[in-house]
Image (cartoon, rainbow, N blue to C red; front, side, top):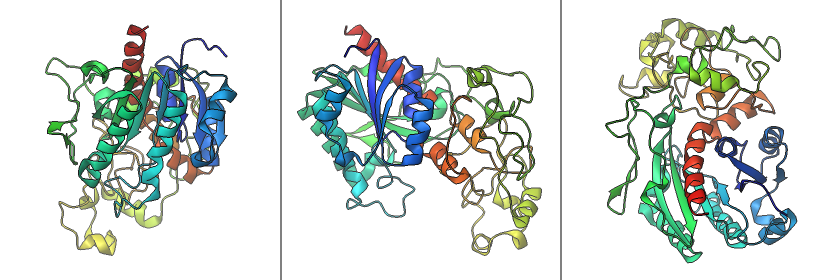
Length: 396
């Protein structure tokens, strides 16, 4: 079967953040595999023309998938994927080589072997670089080389690409039968107040892609990201589709609104009475250290003021958000709204992740938060996708 334009499949697709960014970069998604049925439902809702399979990838025959799609070996442009990263994450309680999720890279490579795409893209956490003192990353690069792919790796800061949060991701890119050009990874488009808190060195070189001195664009702030969304009280649901608070005030808001009729997934979570008391004391840009000791959880009453600096944080509207996790629980991060006495809604978290407003999340409220927190920021994925597209089109 012939397809127009650049094509890709997405393995371990999640809700579809990586695919959303690649689609914005001009790629067409043909197939996605995701083990979680709710994540797969969200992916399908937002990528209507894609074949989405809900299954453990270890049960899928890669060659049969390729044949069902009507693709010759070597006939697809890109295989993208983010094999589960929990076993590598620096946030994991124990990083273990025995964690079975760490071995799902082999399943990704099995699909690469069966499809022989022109390019590959693997996305993961920064902790992958230091896991087993770099042995895992070496093994992945060696395996790609055995399959005929010249590959490289970089750690990209999402804020350098217009995403208003402190989030870092590792990207591996590879080209079939070619050496990966030094320019394969996207150049940062702005400076941002972020710095890595993880190992950045691999083979004696830093993997972090930093802005050049000539880059002068300002970073996207939290207020840029969510300032036009309608205000809510804690626990308020309101209409399923809401109107905007006003006209878009910046390009980020204009981009978010393209193709949408209003604001969905925008219901304010409830807050306990004790958290409302704590919130009363927290200034913009402040955190748990603003809260009187008698209102703090007992474990935090004994903590040093320099510890847990993001917990019970109220974001600075002129700054970046902390990393959006799988739940916007104020006990774990700076998830209090800068001017409204409540935590972020799913839509606000999605805006901070750079999802457009037409992207709809399904499932329970907890499941929606998890989908947003586990996603690749689409703007970051778009930047990577545009770089890959440029390389592939130059080679045609």
